[in-house]
Length: 354
Ligand SMILES: O=C(CO)COP(=O)(O)O
Ligand SMILES: O=C[C@H](O)COP(=O)(O)O
Ligand SMILES: [Zn+2]
Ligand SMILES: [Zn+2]
Image (cartoon, rainbow, N blue to C red):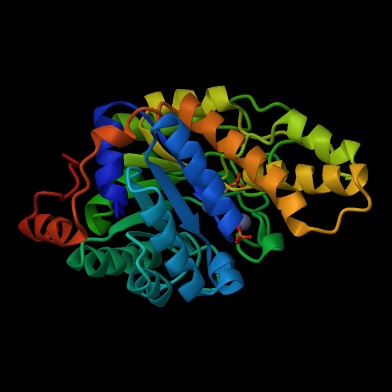
């Protein structure tokens, strides 16, 4: 069993200057695709489940699945992370089900829609941090609200994400506030807002600095060189995946994601965790559509799921290679959560924010 905490994994990533993609899962096929990719290139992985994934798959199913994946791939350090926790209970029940890491997303209130005050965010994130660290689990906080700099819109349409139109002061993380936030909350990793948003429709054109503010990451990294930064909404929405979906009966309007080369630039500026869900969904859906179109007599779900799994595996492998994660799995000796708990208690893992 090689379940690793986010903190240990990102400390390793920082030491060796690489980034780690965090792929979302909802089902067995996605779990196997990620692990196959990781094994192929000897990479550690972060698998994350949203609240939606937990209610779709059931907590017990997810917990047993993670246990199974860790047993099938004993040589791959696997971090199991709660994506976008909305309150203390979401985070604590995730840990109870074997997650080694949680995101307390206090940038929004408990309804996961209303932008929260800074005080609310600090208060709830600090509390979750304190509790998670008692048992050695890691915590990711978020400062700034995800949403498009083109439209000012969050992404409430998928059930979480800010409602209404936001201004740039909300959509871009303030570097000075980031320093204060990390000091006060003691988070292990900090998700920042720089113009990315969840889903396929991020940018209406190939993003430049106007709409994808990499300069914000650079400014935060200057002030917090020892803090692990997290980029959400970091699918690249590759043209070839849009084309496959549309070639086989889909109708996705032309859209643009976060170019892989921008993420690689981010990794040089302290980005250690890169959240990717949409690309994996698109890789799978393209194959579902292709098989449905090319073999109309087919009715065995495995004939759809296997090519979908292979496409997701290839996507994951490409990201693990591009972000420099490949080759590091075998170099990591996993520290058990109980040991991590002792390290937190001793103060040795306190964030360096001098
Ligand atoms: O940030 C994400 C999950 O937290 C996923 O982002 P994408 O929708 O860009 O894949
Ligand atoms: O928010 C990030 C992921 O894309 C999860 O999406 P979801 O809530 O639809 O599972
Ligand atoms: Zn989402
Ligand atoms: Zn996210």
